[in-house]
Length: 172
Image (cartoon, rainbow, N blue to C red; front, top):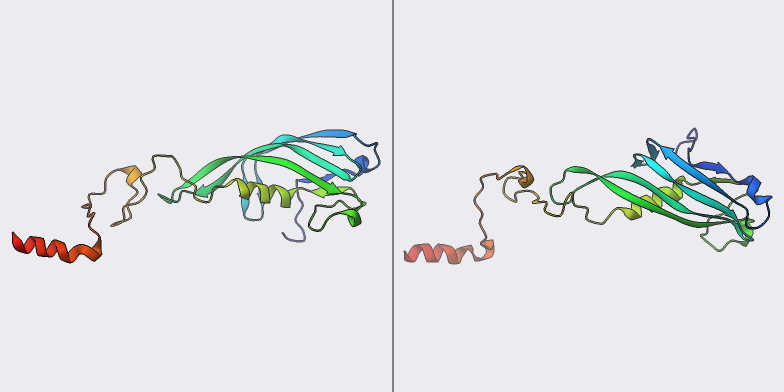
């Protein structure tokens, strides 16, 4: 992120740091598009609740979006629907937080971009496919078999055993 980058997922929860334990606020999001580094979420919508706890501010909620990715079988670009579950405690004061935990400074500002980016990427399967019956690409010519047959002959013979096929042809 550049120095001039202004996050639309940056919220000031300073008022909650001064509030009584258990005080909460609900925040609703509805952005047509959010770009977080290399991740594009279109649209990003949902709601979450921020609650003051004795340890800091606890965020919980659900966000919905689509993320562009590529089918591993046919290599076509596709939009994958994802659900992002927020369930994060931002510790205040920061010096009491366990190592690696999310913290909130005295300013009360929480930038959710890194958390939303990480959770969105975790929702993308290791091998996304555009549909369960995706045919993939022809191994001979690279044609997308979802668009129709390419006309290549199917050769199911293991190339290591091709010498046996030649011997059989010689007997005929």
